[in-house]
Image 1 (cartoon, helix red, strand yellow):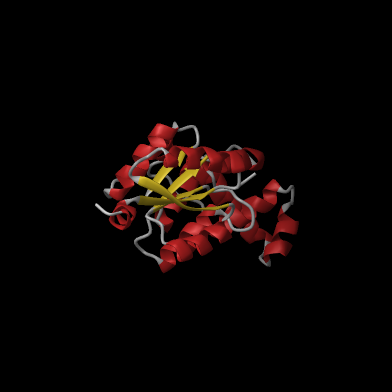
Image 2: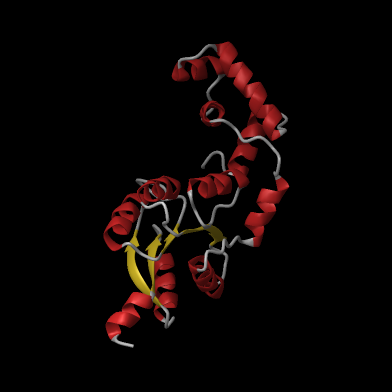
Length: 213
């Protein structure tokens, strides 16, 4: 097989992570694999979109929480332009809501950074065969809240302002709705999250990935 043929058969991986140390570790692991090559690196979602468009990698490893444009926005943009894009989420952030959103946007697998490098390499190969790989903790999170209702975007907007310490009147003004609407959405939030009060609701929403710290 010629060098050109060999290059064409390699799994070309795009690494997206805002932490240089993480990128270095993944780069080193990929460099030791005979069937893989580094396509490129990106430090945020905006760069990931540009690099994917330019490099057309076989697989993109994507962190979720990054500056400028986050991973979820990047997944949405990339899959919108390249519907068959193979994107593996690799993040420190579990939570069923965040996981579900990533999968609905088109992520093909979801791993946590606590995974070993060997597990990540195996997941890359599996994804090339059309297999979806989930970290066991991710699977547990999804199973724990299976059948529960997700918060709507309007409810999340209310809860984000609650997390900032705003009262109903201020939230109503910020969102250009009535106080009664805010109260109604808050009742729905408490019910969906099975929360005791507003503070508990914020804590649960962060834990499940509806809100980011």
